[in-house]
Length: 296
Image (tube, rainbow, N blue to C red; front, side, top):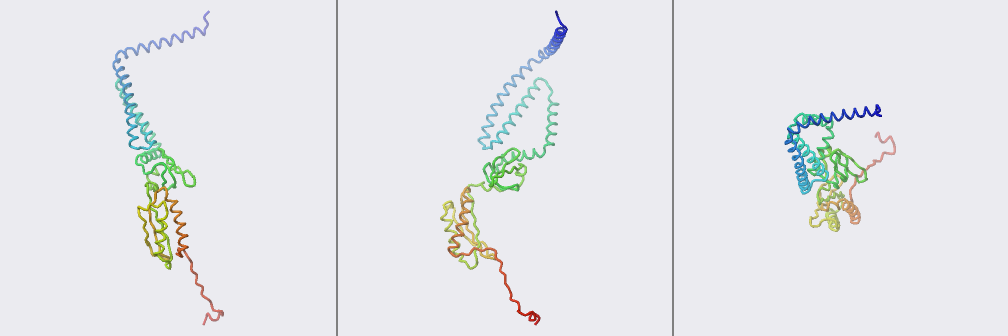
């Protein structure tokens, strides 16, 4: 015996079947009329996807040969893939006779609104692309910026992370890094070491220069082939400034500097060469014993 529920279900199924039949009957004339366009669009999509994959591999190899940073390579690869697929879909839609002008205009309007709302983020993003493309520094370099200094830990598309020598992490927006002066102290393989030492006017200048040259010549990290120069750079108020200049590998710079400063102090002490420092000379004038002598 058929219940009310069964009757309702049968009526619903019948209604759905009628709607599907009506939809198919509406689509069939369109498909019959546009069957050629449909086939062309499907073939275009299949072939286009394969072409995009081949081009994508070629672009990847080109970026690797160009030496682009891995972060920039991944971003450009994803951008190329998304743009190619979008263009392919637009071409396929045009092949089917679908007007894509309104869709493209809507996407452009949405993109413009998002761009206005994310100006700072997009500025940092543009700065990150410039840094990764122009390479003013790379991961592992020691840089000095207005926000701080340290070794570059990572370069992202929005932020650059710097690790200080005391293990503090500084996150700097790429727009700030790209548009502000910075110093890359490890950008070259070699670095010139300059030590300026002040000695008193009573000390022997020639002996001081000989000691400085000898200490640099004996230190193993100093590049002897590049030459060692000693000179008097200034006749100052408190003493004579003597300078020694030599070349070292960038990785050896700080340890060489610290060691040589210590050795210079010990050697100057042995040679009785006085290193100047700020002194305050106080002259005391004796006053008369009797106060009435002051008025005489």
